[in-house]
Image (spheres, rainbow over the protein chains, first blue to last red):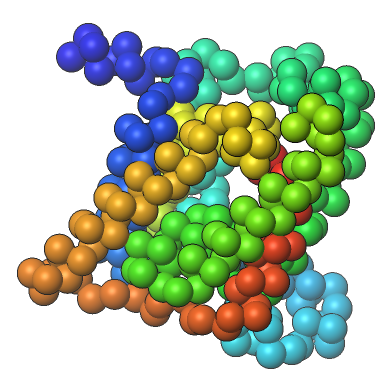
Length: 181
Length: 93
């Protein structure tokens, strides 16, 4: 018992143990609610809700009417859960940085690569997130929604997506890090 | 209501496992593309293997039916994946 508690308090688990936990969550998602895990869809649902309130005509298209219906969906609640789950995880290992000084930009590797300025982190996160969300829209899911959830149903789409993701991720990392790669 | 609670419950464990695997950190995500830390792949593939075998066993017993399988659009999936990788390596999310 004590061993388990101590393990829960560790900052990083073995990725295999954490992977087993996520695998079980994936099974339960299908078993209990007949749906798949996913994170990117939630933001599209919320964006659709916002967009239809502000500019109904612009959002009256096939994508928002049929593929990603706006609203407070299952995915949105799941995303809220992910947020708090991550916080609980960090709190359990006492690494929660909420309200701390370097909360927004605390990663040493990031600081070495791009500089210590916090605004840079925000700007890059913002534009990077636009790229991520847009790409997830094209592919039909993100790492969790397509690669993991689709992969566990053996969907070919998931494996195409993983291949593409790693190919361009490796090239991008090569460009950013050049000699230090 | 019940499904919302299930979603919240599953989401919490999802987030918890992501945090514990270190996938909430920039260096873990970018280092998998630099081949210096394979935690992301180990985590993803373990999750895949566990849920894949679990789901197919449960379906074999007739306990579950599969939800809609994500559609295959070869160009869409590939192009989406290619753009996604750029964002992933840039932001580390």
